[in-house]
Length: 319
Image 1 (cartoon, one colour):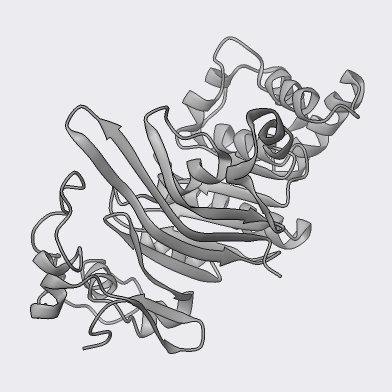
Image 2 (image 1 turned 90 degrees about the vertical axis):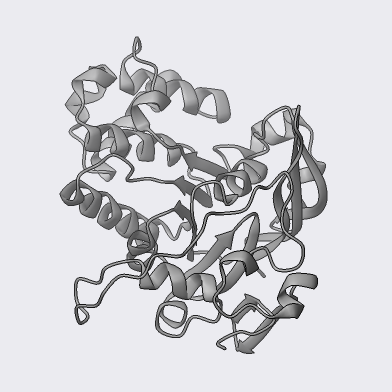
């Protein structure tokens, strides 16, 4: 049984210009101890998936259909008080931009202590302080820095502190939304290595969200590719990278340089992502697809599987 199952999730945002079709029929699962990555261009719906799982969507968001099952229980049916018991205790999140996620006028250690006391009533303040010290050591931070303020940390240290906060209540699932944004490549490598080690040591399930396909390739067992609010491909990471089924996935790979493979001329995907106030009929990728046919323009493609565990939403996969 999967730890997390997202089934046919559809989310729209209500705006003055009309409805934004942010997510349409998104489905995937995540097993215990597995790392799954969602990759795609900005605005494709990746963060909306994360916020829907946490039930932290903006007030103008409307979940029109679908289920989000955590150990078989639908999170969408839970009220705010019930979700407070789930957040951080069962599911936690590493938000984008660690500096903005930390309060600049409070010491870093005190902020993590506050999170522990708010979400786990079994801890005393002294025990919470000890837990934070252990967490700092776990993520590679000196426990003596607990009394420092966020501005006294480097970018990599702040990111490690946010990871420590996400692990504070020993959740089963951690969602990492662009966990290495604005970090240099050396620190990125350190953070990803640290998260991989924590995943293995603690048997965590991880949901990575990134626009950087190289991060997903390194960190994840399986990967999903999102485009214009839809999950267009899902499968084992190596299979998706070596034999992509969807033309958008192939376009992403052709526009990204390889450090190990032969040198090749990069080929950007033509055009721009569609306006999600008025998404195109049929396949949402067809205006940019070099192999689009009449059926692509008129009919929404089904999700098909050509190999075990490898799926694509396409009329002509691998064509």
